Image 1 (tube, one colour):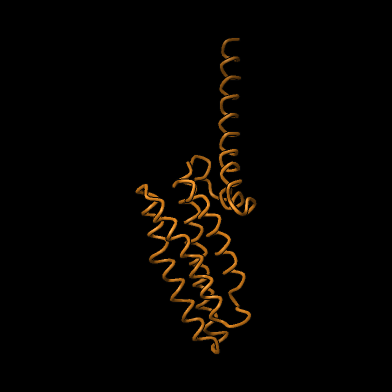
Image 2 (cartoon, one colour):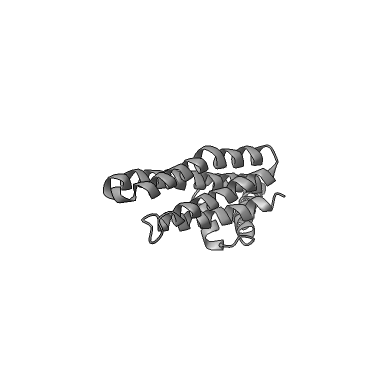
Length: 165
């Protein structure tokens, strides 16, 4: 009988931990401009179940990095399909390489070292660079969907980084 009580108690504690993990993500995401996107991004990464707010910010910065790599791959493919867009694609390539090689590492280092203000700067710049890329097409860009995604992810990530200030 005593063993059954102990097992029931362990199950209850485990359920409380699972509920608190879910509510940590939900509570954090409620403070962002896009709750559904935030929850979706964090739920898709197993590290989020044990992460604190700094960890959640780092996970989202990884998402920015992944989207940047995806966008650079798309740009490289567009050189062949849309050679008339070379100038705009060159500009976008430069801007996305800045996100990958400067903004993302700056944000990761700053948050890892407990200096979130500089992390916020890197995240903000990722959105700015994506917007500048989009404007370079002077009309409908073939990267609009990816640009909008970058802006949204950057805004959600910024909101979480701001919680660390």
